[in-house]
Image (cartoon, rainbow, N blue to C red; front, side, top):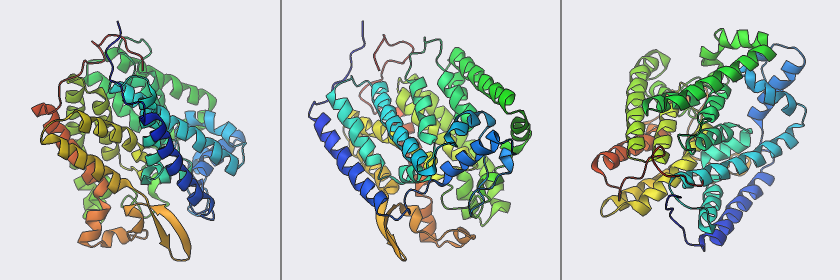
Length: 430
């Protein structure tokens, strides 16, 4: 017997498609007329350079790409993908990666809606279209597509994994694969353990080890360098900018360094802040899971990982897409005075993340978020005024507010009723 699902109005299908075409079309026009200022494929160039270095037997972790001298920072196993990618021209590779990334974003939103209990119909497709259209005008996605990043693919691996029933023997493999490609998603393994899903956590750990060993077999020298200590050196990620206080590092460490005038005091304050955020975020994620709110738990765990990571560039914040879906669902399900609060939080998230088309000196209008207009580079962030600090830390403030609202929502039971947990619910089709 299949679990009862929630349907959405069929008119959302064509309406959502029209909204996506309008948003994506306007974004594409800006990209085409930006003179290369919007899509530069900077990070994609690093991936391709790493793949090319591996193909030619050069030291992958010694490369420095472009004027910014960007190093390769990903685990050796990712070279399995980056080697063939290095054989494609930059422009074609950027189109390929971004087209696949947009498809992965759509799959992420679709699966998140399934986790929230919506059945597969035209309305669900329409909401997926609409969220994807909005996303291309949010700063994390503008940066993601501009740089040719891969975070959307890692997010999809995690979402696809958590959308599975707990009795699937392979549940956890996607999380393990994502953690093997980038260490930050490894926090979801701890989340599985804390929610009593030991088998899935074991599968995730096994997948991580298997992929890492594959990387060691195929790239032994690179593996010795990376796992011998390079993966612990966060300065490799920030040396091309003004350090961990760079405005686009929207982690708690970035906040602490900017607020307390440098790494001396910033790093000392960041560690207890990160520990507190880790405990609070995981506690909320576990509580949400026990209430049957798996999609909310997933979003809380993801934002916890982003906050406590030493470096979380804004393009790591692609988890905003499933977060907006969860918030929109909360608006639909809440009652009385809680509904305006949920709606305000949803609108606030969009406003904080939105990339407004702004002109620069001798530059055409480009989509830029709140952070893009603040003084940056060369330590300018350490000299911010109070007003600039308030604007520059809005990402973190928005997530901390989300944590507070989620805590009140879960503890006080503001939702219309708990869902069935994935482990106990009857089979459903995602």
